[in-house]
Image 1 (spheres, rainbow, N blue to C red):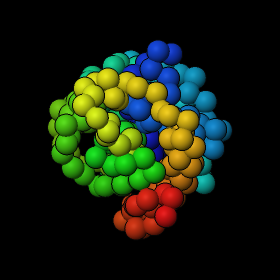
Image 2: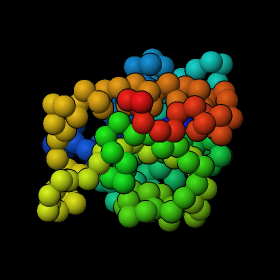
Image 3: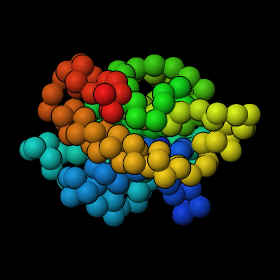
Image 4: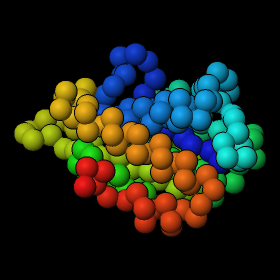
Length: 190
């Protein structure tokens, strides 16, 4: 079973914030694959369905970002999902709006949600789909930036990025991840 985990913060207060693009991407996959996230277990909302003949699970941990691994690890253990079949979708400040980076492994790079997953997975070797949210132009605290809403201009770019993220994830279900990386890494607007 392929498992796509989107990182974000639960609650309407955090809807459409930069830190919740992982949740937005899971919502896109939910619509695209017709998989409702109507089940709850281990502090996660999730849903399972078939896509291109492959069983697929979509997950939104319901812990706060910094504790993402607390729910994700028991869930993938319960369903006996191999870490090689786990894809984590999340925001990345080191990438500008409109940029998408797929990687097979890596450090947390200052991202507390990834740090939590690395601790609970006991490895950095799982697939990542990093969605650019950019950095603030001026002196704004990082926490305030990631919890801020997108500008109207950024929302237009983000819609396209989220759609392309959905396409990349669909391809990842039945293609080698290196092929997906070669096709989708880069600037979505290019």
